[in-house]
Image (cartoon, rainbow, N blue to C red; front, side):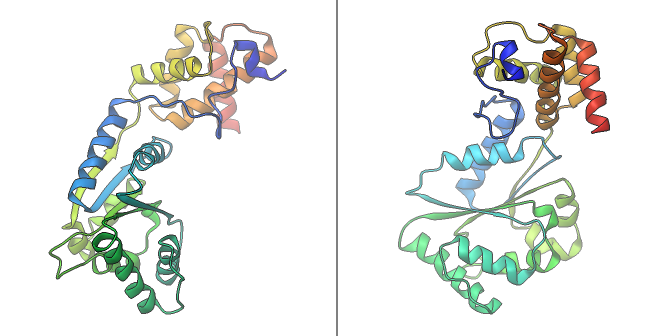
Length: 267
C-alpha cells in the first residue's frame, strides 16, 4: 500500500508530475494580471522570483489559456546556450528549418513573425525561461531582433522569466536600450503564512481527502519552514506523509514536521 493512502488520499498531490491542483494566491493573481497586460501592450516583459516560488506554474497556466487562433506560444529554456544556438532553437520552435549562419536565422525569424502577425493575424508569444542565464550577446540582439518598422511597432510578446539576478543583469548600462522596451516587470514573492496553510489544505482536498492529516501546529511549522516557497512546501509535506506512515501515525504533528525539515537538510 502506498504511504499516502494511510491518510485518505486518492493520489499524492505533493509530488512532481502528480495531477495539478491549482491554488490561486494573491501573488499568482497579480502575475496573471501583469501577463495579460503584457499581452495587450506587446513588447518585452520580465517575470522574476526565487527558485520554486511559482513562476513556471503562473506562466504555464497563463499560456495554456491563450486562444491558439490568436496567439502562437513558443517556449524556450535558456540554461546556457550561445547566441548561434539561441537563434537556431528559436527558429526551430517557430516551426522553421534552422540555418547554419546567424544572419540567415535572424532574417528568417523576423520574416516569420511578420507573416504571423500580418497574414495570419496571430501574435507570437515567446517565453524565454531561465533567462537569468542569458548571455550579453543574446540580450544585445533581442532588441534588434524584435525591432519592426523602425521601432514603431511591437509585433510579438517576449517574456523573460528567471531568478532575481535577471533584473540585476538588465540594470547594467549596456542593456539600457532593451530596458527601455520593457513594458511589464513583476517579481513573485511567494506564499504568505496563511496562503501556505491554505495551499496544503487545498492540495489535500484536491486529492479527495476528507479527514485531518496535519494538526494546526504542524501546519504552522510547515509554513515557517517553507518560507513561502511552494516547492519546499511540497517536498516537506511529502516527507511528512512518508515519516508518518512509517511510524503508524494517523495525524501528523509538529515533531514529524521537524524531522522532515532535518531530513531535507541532510538530504
